[in-house]
Image (cartoon, rainbow over all chains, first blue to last red):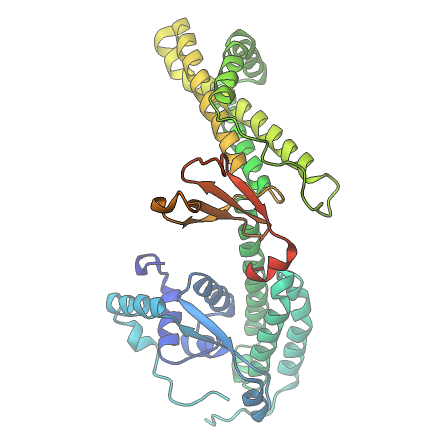
Length: 104
Length: 296
């Protein structure tokens, strides 16, 4: 997927991932995008190799007394696409704040 | 304003319980091999929502409706993507595509004819008056110029759990494909001759004859070649062509291209050069123990 074909919402999701937001709910919270946009977009990005996912270790989740989450992160190609999108749409950086605290 | 989650009001609690109950319904849409993981991910996401109820409390019913839509949209996307992947290169998608092209050509012809009566009459006249005389030699030309080789699907395969045998399905698919290719060739030749008919009248019949013979010969050759590039078991197109060996070592070992069935049914060895040990493409069937190497 080239940045030329990126939709605005996908560019926002890539930006959120690049700033350390790791799972669907976090991305929805920070971007204001609805779940009907965020989750299918994450699936598509994963299929296209821009994003990879892995499950949080069960003991980590148990320590915080919650179910294990599926974490998403940008791949090398995803990072390149994200950086191209950020150059093209500089306002993206202002839309999404840096992740400061860990979400419980 | 406190950032800590406050106590959940009964309405939000009810809404989240309703979403929990909705999860199995949406999960039934997800392809079976991804269902468990999908439900686990959404359970974690809904847990997050339950423990950060401000989002639901602020937006109320709109947020719950949006999440319910999100669940369905996510599940539906996975199902559609899986269906698209399954259909890619399959025998069914090949026949459906040919049928769709036939319908398209017929629709164009019907539109130009103006009525069903004229449409049927035109096709009958063109079929009996020209196509039958062209199709037969074209079929001979297509099959006659095709290199002789043993029948690819020799019937010595582990029987799949289906009503028809592997060989019957192979032959049925080939017949259907050839039939649809001939129909499409006929319709294409009729439609393409229309502009010529407007310009030169009855002399356009010669154009139609030429186009028919060309389209039918090419179409039939395609149908036969396409059959050669399919898995003998599932009839899916073989993929992942890989070069094996080096031409300089042809005397000692084989070299050529290897194609694989993505379902893991077998490999097709296509030699670069014919040798006494390998005159034709060679199909190597893989038993189920190889299944682990192929994706779901």
